[in-house]
Amino acid sequence: MVILGVVGCQITPLEIIQKDQYPISSNLEIQIRRAAMNASSAETARLFSSAARLLSTHNGTQQTKSIIARVKNDPALFSRLSRSDRFEVELIDLELKYLSANPRYKNDLIKQLEVLTPTTLVQEISALELAAQIQISMVDHVGAVRTLVRLSTYPSVDEKQLAERIWSSIKKIPLG
Image (cartoon, rainbow, N blue to C red; front, side):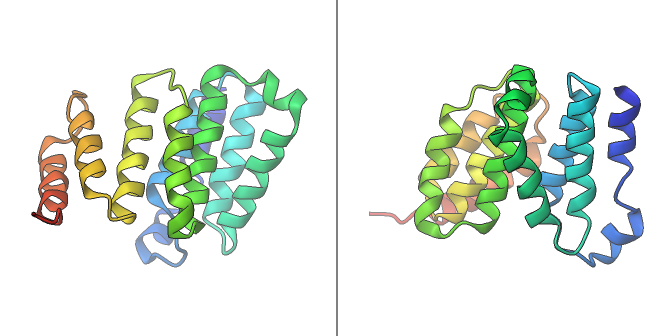
């Protein structure tokens, strides 16, 4: 399983990332690869690895959505996933929806995100990162600041970058 996860991390060639030939959500790609490394079974690791590999192709986001939908819609497969893997599938699904969602639908994504229950510290941070990203795109800077401040309580978060993001959102809050 660990070998499959490591292979999943090495799928996208560096030159593709450097040339930026394809629009890849780097956070999403990193998240899928992390899910592959931490998957509870070899079968689940292969699913996540396939999803990460597809992101580096021309129509990758759509194909990745298809894989995630198949996993979620197959009760036998979804029930065999560990709680942690189910969280990863749901979070990846929400991020894929966010990438293609219109502004009215993004509020629903925040509500769906709040319902998810992370099982690890890394998953909590990933969920908060996605929430902040969605709130900023919705121009909900007050919500984004709240989320970013919550994110600041985690020790592994880059404080300088987080402070810049918080200040950037605070500057956009209308006064009065």
